[in-house]
Each structure stands twice: as C-alpha cells, then as structure tokens.
Image (cartoon, helix red, strand yellow):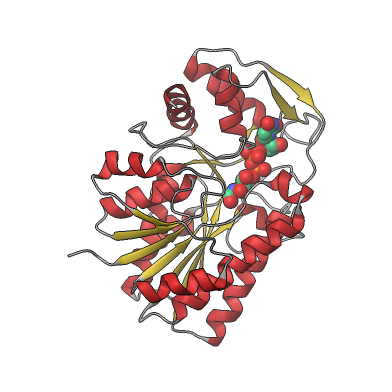
Length: 338
Ligand code: WQD
C-alpha cells in the first residue's frame, strides 16, 4: 500500500527526476508529466535502474490547459509537486515572454487540476532569486523579497503570490513553497544527474563540461563584485538533499500538521561559496586544473545570496547530508559517465 499517488510536474527534469527517486524510495506512487523541453526520456531508465520502478511520464505541455485538465481527469492524485518551469536567469532576461507564458500558465493549470481532486496538496518549486539582492545575509524566510533581478525570478515571485492569494481564498488547498538555492551535483549512484536537453548555463555543469573537454573554457561572469574574492556568492545544495526535502514537505502537507498556508521554507545548506571557490573545489576533487577566464558581469545576477535553513530543519526535520565536495565529486562522476 503506497503512502499516496503523487503527480510530479516536470518529473524528467534535473530536480524532478531526483525527487521521483526519493518519493519512490519513501513509499509513494509517482506519475510524471513532462514535455521534455529541457530533459530526456532516457532519465526514466536511470530512475528504473535505481528504484526498480518504471515511472510513466505523460508527455504533455503543462502550459496547455486542455491537456493538463485531461491528465487530472485520468488520475486521483493525493498531491502534486510542480517543478515544470524554465529556469535560466540569463535566458529569461533575453526571452522574458516565454518565461512568463510557460512558468505562470503551467502553474495555473496544475492548481486548476489539483483543486478538483479529493485532496489538494501542492509543493511549489520556488527560488532564492525571489530575495533579489537581499539587505541581510543569510536570508531567512522572513527576509523581505526585493525587486527581482530577472524575469525568471519574477515568475517565481508571482507564483508565490498566486498561491498566497489562492490558499487565502480556498484554505483547504494546502501548499508549501520551497525556495531553492543553487541545486547541483548528481545522484550518488551515478545513474541519473543533470542531463539537460539544452546547453548547460548553470555553473557546476559548465565546470564539469570544461573539465571533460566538452567545452573549451569557463568564463567567470565578473570578479569585481563586493565579495571576498570579487566573484558572486551562492549556496550550493546537493540535488539529492533537495529531493528529499520535497518528500518531507509532502509528508508535512499530508500529515495535517501545517500551521501556515502556504508554508514557506528556504532550501540551502547555509554556506556561501564564491564562483572562484567553487572552481577550486572542483579542481581539488577532480585533480584537474580548470581552464577559465574572467569575463564581464552577467545581467540578472545577484551579488550574494545564501540561506538560513533552520526552519526546514526544525519544521520538516530536513538534515542535508552533502557538502560542496560531494557536489563536485558526484557531478564529475556523472559527467564522465554520460
Ligand atoms: C551561479 C553563479 C554566475 C555560469 C540558479 C538557477 C535558478 C535558481 C537560482 C533554483 C553566478 C556564475 C555561472 C558560468 C559563471 N535556482 N557563473 N560562469 O544564476 O544563481 O541561478 O540558482 O530555482 O534556477 O539557475 O545559477 O549556476 O547560473 O550561476 O561565472 O558559466 O555562477 O554569474 O554568479 P544562478 P548559475
């Protein structure tokens, strides 16, 4: 008997696929919906290799209201996790309308479908980018959101606002907002990892591609920021730790213990690392020296952001297991295999 049937919207994506594994390992039945915009069907083989379960993925565009409604008519879900969104800060500056159309419509359609189910438990993939250039560090869940630095960040602020308004109107629609910091690394088994259908733009996969000779060099986007070595500071969190936080968030929703709706949690490990320090961590773990140069700042970047994650530990019982060396080791192991 499973703990419940969960829709993972964006289930073949990077964080989605690792969360599917964690949900199955914790007794849930999982259905995925993903149009492979930034993922590959082959990840289902990796999930099966780890869990022994062949997860079904419905290849639909969740921004399509008809297809999404039909999905919810087919299944009785006990909850849903909504990952399906475009997520590149830089790309969103370049193509804002695609980001608003996709990220907002897919969320609205999932809310519509879930509200018609017997139980409405939604975990929403938000982001630390909603804090903008915060006045205080580390940021807590009470740190005021500031002006978004990119359309991507603004779609996450709007997604949160949509859920605050909707849960206020329909209190029995229970939601959790998870503000991710910088997800990185790969599953310890080496059978799944970041395998985007589009060229990587995030720091860690770019590092491992350069390390593997698949990319000529890494450009550090600016070393003239007001930080300890001039490059930007981020809070890198292992994707397996992040995945498990979703399982805990879902169990929290289904337990009825929720005291705020939506409930909001930061998911970072609470350590700030600069871009240059991340590069050196890779070099230390891989034994390779990385070919990088210093280039101009990237529009949309915040200078520094890292988390106070005590609330997720206290309320959800979340205890991240991995640090930056594990991130680099698993990311490098995955890069060499794929
Ligand atoms: C990190 C740092 C870059 C590439 C991510 C996700 C976003 C959200 C927030 C979850 C920045 C620098 C990068 C390169 C570089 N997470 N960099 N050269 O922008 O913090 O956003 O975290 O929701 O979805 O994308 O991540 O990895 O792109 O950049 O110097 O080739 O690395 O300038 O300082 P970012 P990132």
